[in-house]
Length: 208
Ligand code: AMP
Image (tube, rainbow, N blue to C red; front, side):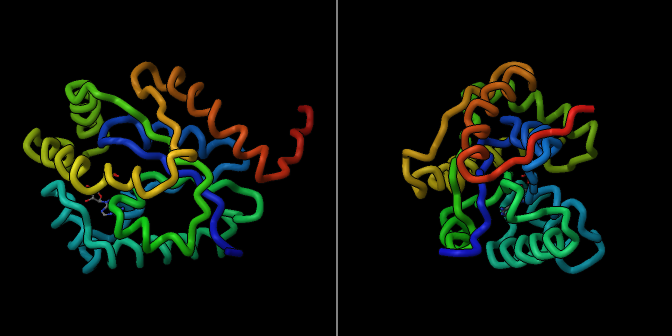
């Protein structure tokens, strides 16, 4: 299907490090990182959509699919019109979407998914630790309360993990999410660099 965004998905439980890895990757020419949660957090919280987001996220629930997909499409359009994201040159690195099988189905016509990077971490305590730290740093209500964090894990297991089955096994790469951001990033690069090479013609860097 033509005109689908060439993408990789960053996948993993809350606190597994999707945002950290996505942000680093997004700094490299030829990659464009978009985190659905960041787009939600950038909304005007007094707007209807902002209020809906707060209502769901503060309880650790997912925002309903229709609102999420609509907001995502509008944001992608804006990023493209502003040339912040250049579909012909950039590999789209999506973080936090699709978050359930319904969203994955809904996005099938829009995404050409080359890889699903599954940041794997079985240590829920380590992830909770990361989230508590992030709550303080980023003022995130959904990460400040242990009860909400636990519910976020439940939602992940019930609604988000099945997304992994939606995509062919051949494109899912399991990556150990334990270790420093640099160590994990090295593992991520091993997967994404070949994808970029296979699908984009990256101009060589000019020597400084
Ligand atoms: P995140 O920053 O990815 O941890 O997302 C924070 C919160 O934003 C989630 O707990 C949800 O309430 C909401 N959210 C982010 N992405 C999605 C999505 N794809 N679908 C529904 N809700 C989402």
